[in-house]
Every structure is written in C-alpha cells, then in structure tokens.
Length: 167
Image (cartoon, rainbow, N blue to C red):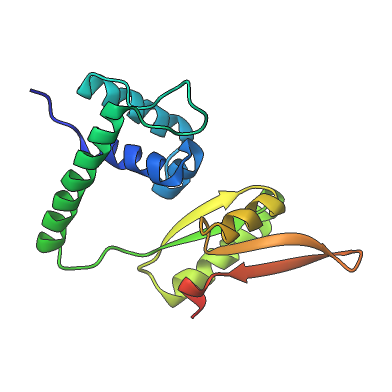
C-alpha cells in the first residue's frame, strides 16, 4: 500500500480547478514543469492515467475523477488538522504582475513599500507582457498589475489592483 503525498494531490486539484497546467503552476507558485512532474508521479503512485490525452484541454479519466474526489476529502482533512494545531492564520499572498523590462527599476521600491505596510504578506511576482498581465488580473490570477497601455495615441503606465487588497 502506497501513501499519496498531499503536494501531488494539490497539484492535481489545481490543474482540474484552473483547467490548465500553467495556471495551476501560477496558483501554486511552482513552475509548469514541476506541476507536470508531480502529476506524472501521482499517476505512478496510484497506478493509472488521470487525464484523457485524446480529449482537448484538461479532461479527467474515470479513475482521475475518483482520485480528485478522494483527493479533495484528503486535503480537506489535512488542512483541518493543520489549522487546529497552527493557531496563526497563514500569510496572505499578494500576486503582482509587472512587465519584465520594468522589474529592476520598479520592483525593489514596490516591495519595500509593501513590506512597510505589513511584514506578513507573501509576494508572488509574475513577469509578462502588459496585455497578458491585464488578462490575468481580469481572470483573478493576479491582484496588482503594473502595465504599459496605449491611450489617446500615447503610452501610459497604469497600476490596477483588485478589491481583495484595495478595499
């Protein structure tokens, strides 16, 4: 009888919930290849294929559906146990998106400013082109985006945040 590591179940459920390996990796703060490797390892542990490769997108096999249902229960019990022995709530994560060519100039001062408000915030930094960052913000994948947009035929910096952090 084998044990299923909870991090493998978390990756599986994130892939299913996000319907994407890439988005699951972003949610978990991992690389896409790490999530993919964890799914392969989970398939080895349970001894079956979890995803239907012939179907478009992310589609579970019948066995995959069973593993996800059981995995949700296992993680729920695991998280409940941890919350009973860990009285302090986990640190919130602020997910920031910034174009790569502005990271050096803007990121360090922004981190210092955020840390000045609260030392109990984890930061997840994502770098991409402005259009992709704005799409991820709209999709709820990011909380704050610094982007370069074209407005009235001129380029402007915009900083947009979601209500979760900006009340």
